[in-house]
Length: 288
Image (tube, rainbow, N blue to C red; front, side, top):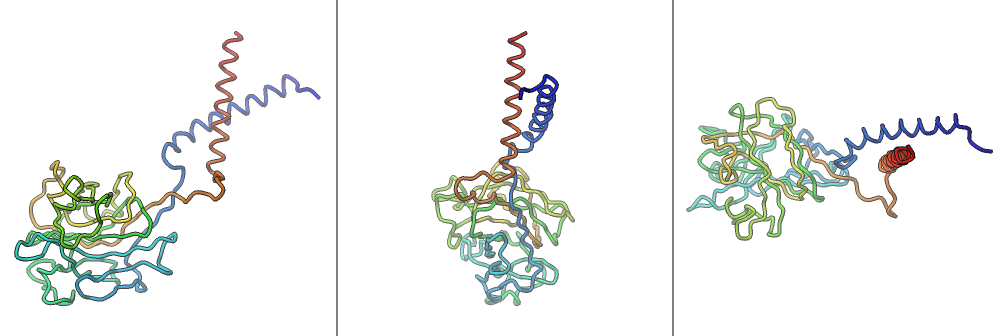
């Protein structure tokens, strides 16, 4: 049974509508069509704080893993005497009831425990730059992630400057015994890329960190001019913050057997219809 001209025209109009829809969708699929988002906050008494001593860690694993990803947080600062510029481990200070995460470095502490940090004259339980000791949190993920945002729970100034770096290799991700200068990409053996330096306003819910880097190791901490070679901020003074949470994203793993996920299939179908319409218009123009 043949098609009537009316039926053919109806089909062509449908193709035109779907092709227009494809053009709209194409705008939104210039980046990966969908991703998994993870929010890592410290407001959970079930998280594993290994100890209260220097070198302690806070771990998201087991039931606290997200999308099968684990996270280990550790604290670091440049506090090795006599030069006082060599990176050594610090003691995380986890205030789980208030969600805040800070640290006590070895120049602030008295002994090996976070509980012996002096409370005066500096905010010594915070991630700070007092005494020219620059504190950082190292976030180590079991899978490479893209860091997309940070949530600061407390800060001593408005705004507060923050430095963020990602381990991109090929050197080691280890920090102990290094200097902040030596870990930078471009330094001999340096393996950490500066993602950016940010002036984060007070009461900002998940300050956006726009970048396209994925890594298993991220450094988040107080602004350090060593990581600001272009004078992006050029801040001077003493700054301090405590971190509530961070947000990451990952792209979904490949589908077994090379199958295309359903959202991708739909997009490809619509784009194919757009191509069909273009060919039809080209043919009509030639016929005319």
